[in-house]
Length: 231
Image (tube, rainbow, N blue to C red; front, side):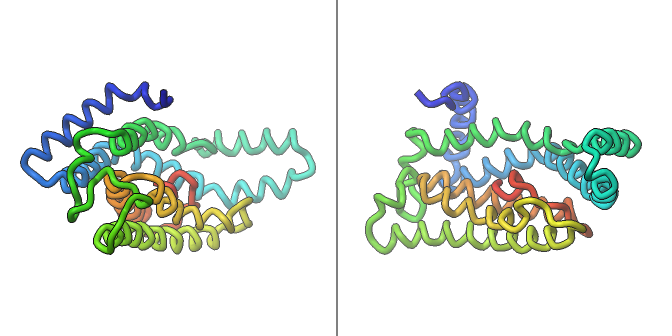
């Protein structure tokens, strides 16, 4: 039994909502609209996470200076950093909790679109929503997968460029900063492991994430995070 089975009651509610939409709309469109509705409901958490990222970004120069001054005195370094965050009324973990709160919602949607159910019997341009790329045959089916992957790659490229700019703007190189932007393309690889419905969800939620971050961080370049790049 999957560890995600604990989410099945919530999955049943999500299934009922998408199925209700599918009564009046094509199922693929119902999935897109349901995804947008969930992301809209989660927007307050995204705003809280953005505030936390901005708070951390604002303190980067001061943190770097403290690290420079006390790099050979670990105990004093911890005390100085704690004092800095206390004076600034900030936290090194600001923004992390709102991101973690969103994880169960995304897990529910992942299970909904990857567990066999009646919704996956419907089609997108003639391709069953439950079909995996490994089982696709014919140019038509492969073209649908290609369009989904191309959409994810396009969004990934936008996120990649933004992450590179954010990493370059840091006063001191961060561990793993050179590799972190490449996580932007992780959704393309993940989409190859899931059926059409889940890939369609990924395209929708990834596009929303890119647009939402661009709006919330307009006028600034926050440090990239693995969670933000992966969504």
